[in-house]
Length: 551
Image (cartoon, rainbow, N blue to C red):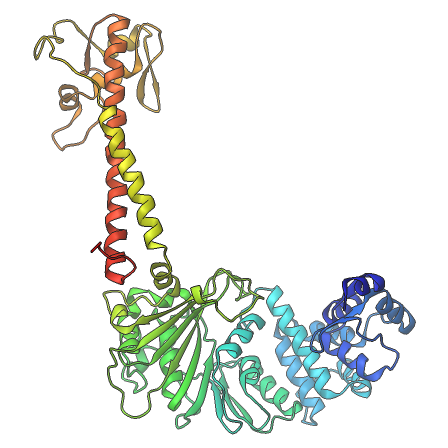
């Protein structure tokens, strides 16, 4: 649609915005579009994301009285919230059971009346999808990790490999089944899942039944302690494991055969879930794990990361954009693993692809730009830390080594040329000790009102005393020795520190020399740091091939 056409119809809104206007779910809006011939036609957008004229939508809502009264979907949600409170997933499971004709475990009559009313006008699929969407949205707003966020589901689906329609997909911590059912390519795909929360497992199974997914089987139970699928080998395993859980059963599982890459420490529960998922992959099968970014570098997991890299199992690590995990602000990675076909062996000529999307919008494109990708040789990763954080490796590969080298070298050369000019011109004096004849203590100067202290540093408070002259003599070796204890600790001793007496003009002459020396000393320190940076940059550039010596 042209800009003029868009202007002619006024503001445009999405289906989600219409749902908010009417107080219903997006599924309900989709249902209205199918059921009502007079629902406004799209005024823009694309087939998968149409836009509607706001004026037309508001007129239609007024006509249907959708905007003036609480919708049936909202009434059902509120009734469920009143009965189940924080256990909403149990209520959703009861609604799904009623829709597929299973015996209810006690759905109140009032709630059941709302379900029957909606079932007369909405298909069970739309009703369950609408309730699921509302539940996911409420979990997101509450900061709950009970459901895998939509952005992470989208990322896992994006980076998942293409699968044949008859493949098997497994999720050992499937929650309400959102991630599992999203990555499966079709209704004929076999989906297996396990979830420790019985209500979530029941709802996931019943939702799959409502959706007509006959090949889905979800079981309740603790996957690590009581694996319900010991013989399952899947083409794809996806998992968004519980993060930061230390009581995952390490003591009773120390000798478990699943730890073929190493026994995880108590603090590395995520690596226990990773190995559990890997144990359920068929040869050539893939694993996509949602992991906290800290798992990529924590010391306790180094040995397991090394085995993942050494055996060629870890194929890709994707650092997702900030905000991908809506339940918390922590950075999140997706680890992409593949079980080698045949016998596992070391493949030192392989690489691990690092993808850094942390500079992208969380709702933006997930296809990385060339500068967001680095194929890192395995041998480079097998160091003392085995850090598989994408940003760590991309920074070194996409740096402008020649440009940085030229800039730093010019800075160093400029500062070095300045050094000679900073040194004061000094001539022969009257000899060592000649200024000690007439001297005074800083304490006497303070009592006379000539010295004050700023953050414990003595400064002049009189035009008869030069601060640079004062501080320069205080830093002489004689005064430093007086202020240093036998343990080597330096602390200014105003009682013992002494400075020579001289007129203000001589003070300023000496003060200028001391000031120049302080500037020289500071520049030397800064040049040392610049020199270190320059040497490190040059060394890394030469080692990576980004820089080369002149012929």
